[in-house]
Image (tube, rainbow, N blue to C red):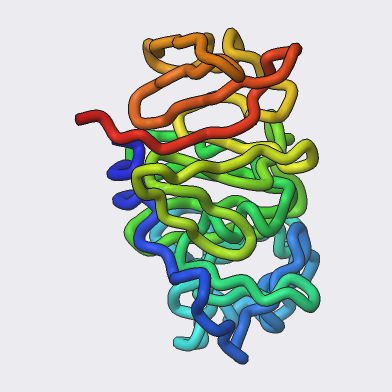
Length: 244
């Protein structure tokens, strides 16, 4: 099940009701993470860093930065920062609890689908990459590949993930699509919108069962049910219906 996949690779999420911590690490995509590391900084004191085990990367010589990796260009200019994902991130005035990286991805609003890879799943955003390892990582970069489509909500058979937190699924759980909030379902290659039709989902999802009913068409793919309504028969809701 997709739930198992996400729970293993993206870890358990902080409940949406948790109060934001006053100690949130500031994030400016494509520019900085916290107050100590900013892209474009020129390394003027070589002793401030030590080589990392991974060629081309360095770590701060200060023990406080032992979990941070830095990459410089030939001019000794900082071009990439990699660090453990903070549990709380400040995006301007917003405070985002990041027990699950998908919550931050939804909050950023520039991130694409979850790329399922052997070893680590990756979500690419504008100026930020989120890497699902046992300790989730965040990379801040000046430029990243353009996403195939931006996701406002992430969804799998375990629930939905948005900027407000995690909303766990249960029998009867249903997510209603909004025109301005594309939904990205783990395992599908493209975001789903209120313009998506059944053929679009069937082309990306595992074998699905289609059933025409009064009020619309329902497409069951695994534990998710996609409901299409209206004369255009476009996607309206995605529900959780675990198989028996």
